[in-house]
Length: 137
Image 1 (cartoon, rainbow, N blue to C red):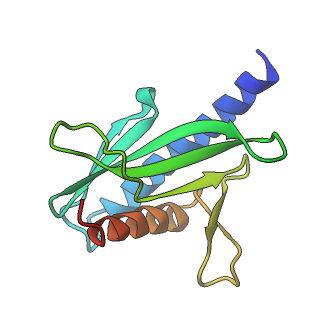
Image 2 (image 1 turned 90 degrees about the vertical axis):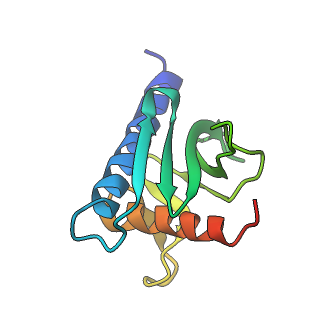
């Protein structure tokens, strides 16, 4: 296996784990978000989230940054009536092999949020869902 293939698999595993952690946290019976639904299509590199009549897609790709280091990128887009994502981007973030994201932790002096812990994964999903309600798409 090539180094690029290995790196892709590492990042894909982190994305899949991000889905699982956020779904487990936000669909837990103790969660205040009773109507949130996660619809995984991980073999196609995305998962959809349905909440309060809005559907959003979290898509995963791998790309190099300005230093040619492979990172994972997640884009959140609204889903249209045809069940395909719209061109509009609600938000996006990158993450490295340590699951550190480009999203800053508001409670920890701006350190990067990590998507390999339930709190970080759930926080990012909820914030992007919140942003989707601020749009008129």
